[in-house]
Length: 374
Image (tube, rainbow, N blue to C red):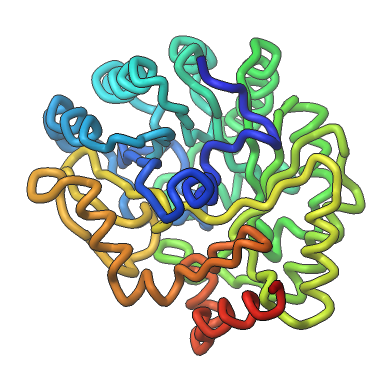
């Protein structure tokens, strides 16, 4: 029997492996199950991979055989595209993967925009531990423009608007049925003016169990978007802490500031996050305990966005554990994977380091933190 998700039990937190195994360990798999989607968001990190139809998948028995060899597999996320868009994919790919996880008692997360018919979600609801959605819409107009900005043939405005209301209604209905729904909001120039409205919509209208806050980092399809600097990120996070509903779990992730930063503004925010009720800060799992598998090719990468390392291997050429261990030994991983036990931090992820800390040696910072905390 799995323990329910809570501020005391976040199975996707990669520091759990440091506590349990003493090192980064492969416990988390993300599977890209589709390249189809009913939207084309300007900020989509994988928009360049989207296609009108999906190719044939690999044999799922090969996928499951590869997963069988991951002894400590604890969490699995299904992503796309929109994994719930195609009935064929739901029947032939998504549901078998979820049932596999059920048999192994693995925590599951579905990454969806929640805009497809409710009965599709209800049909797989018993297998879902976390329904993860993105809510970056300060206004309906923002949804109907930014949410379809990269779509060649535009749907009618009323059709686009209906999808927004479907997202709200589906979230509320599924939450009332007991599903754990986590809504992620990216901090960028468009969302920051509307943070209070978005938070209230997530909490009051959608009845989400958790609201996630992540600064946006322009990558791949969304590389033309304007990010925000560290000072703007800090101010925005203070703002959301000022106005939030303290009864709802707030999760902050992919932070551009770290406990080894010596400036006072970083220290103040981190202390506030540490002491605020119902707030957690998650170490990023990409490259720490997670790999992504493409169900159409069997290719294995660090994350479904960004081309930092490209394809590491395939499930046919190398075991997932060996692929992960090879990555951990790589120069890129070594430059990222510092560790400060006093603050339970394992350093920045690839996006954060490349955007804000290109010339920083985090191994030296690690030594500094050890000195300060001994």
